Image 1: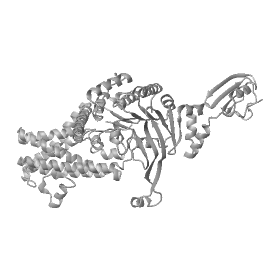
Image 2: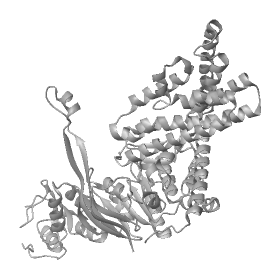
Image 3: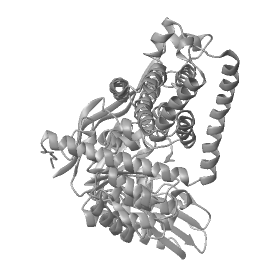
Image 4: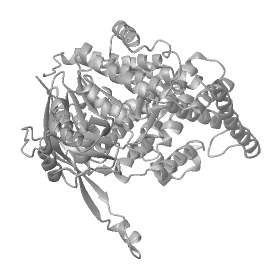
Length: 277
Length: 349
């Protein structure tokens, strides 16, 4: 029996897009349901994460009240920086919850279930989980935004438009380093280091970094694209630059996707007992 | 029509040799010693559409590796595979629309959610029209008796209930070929029987090609019509279940108990177990006439009891598994598979 697909390219693309949109929506809803299955845990993690972030806000408030500005950033700049990074980071882990488990899944040979389904493996594996505490991060950003800028609709729209490429860049970067598990077996140390670097560098004013370090922040540890550039765009209300961020995000996603699929050729399945959580 | 073709399929894995000796661990960091392991060596077979095939072999024989190559999870090192006319490695995504899989040890259902949620997501993954999905789900729920479990989180289901749901989930996209790897592992007798019935029924109703690996002879005997036995990475037996059973039927276990002690040795046939009054014999009916053996035993003294049993199929397969190499296993298989009946050595008192 020979199976053939005789659809025209445009119709095929439209069909693929609709199919993936349906899949991503269904995966998201299933993940939300799985999260809400343990309501108390959800509430604890949600508010726990917001409290954790708020503690840093208190720290910055005390510091900036004493010294005025750090690296050219005042308190409202730092808070908006936190809001952007927090919501982007949260969104990345809500939609692509497996992003920091990818290396372990590869190392343990647990990609089989995803390889057997007619969906892109990279997208399927990343989207098949959500991280509970990430909802706290995501919401924190919007709360800070409301506190700093009020309820102006355009600001909310721009903020939302900015955290989407931020989330994509976070997810693509983490997924890329996790994909190194195909080559080096265990990428957990590298992955932890990159996560720490990216978050730490993103949460301090850009002015504190020297020129050499800034190069790194716009390439291998792209804090510049998830924090500093979005903050500048937000401050200047420059919608034109938003497009640039989407292009950068597409580049990071493309590179990460390519690296994963290159490594996938080296994948060796395992016989571990698995459940989808 | 051919559903599955494996043509000289082989897979070699490279593994690191664990270093021994002083400083060897440090040395191996820079110059690791590698070893090639041939997991599958030139396996060839064809499976026709609608066939029910058991793919057997001991642990480490290469069963799972072969199945994974057929499903496109692993890339073959040599040879080619075709499933439904597609190359599993190159056309994996396309093929996955028409092929289902049930792994006893891997779940495709969300552990914390009821099966109904997983079914909905699987509908989106396999791009089944929502109305068709609902209709198909309702049909599977009825056929598999899943109504009481559809809204219970998977973690709260028993293993048997979960596997039933797994099987139904894998049939949701109406696959043309269904691969099953140890689907009844860990199940009790009743649950195993249910799963076997459902599998046989699925093959009959949906006309699905079934390719099953299992260590459970019950699964194989009750579900499959043909057996392919793989050992040391090579196919050693490929024949119908009927022929395989015939191998078992040619060996009979005869047990006797006498009222008084007698000479238990027969010409050309010694007991495999004996006590003063009882003995048991393995009678190869291709060498000895069973009637003659029974007559000879009856003539030895006053019989209190006599039993005649077929050799379990499990023993035949265990004997093949016990061989040291693929060639030895093939030779063993063909030796036991001789179908012509030879009754030259008739026992006479």
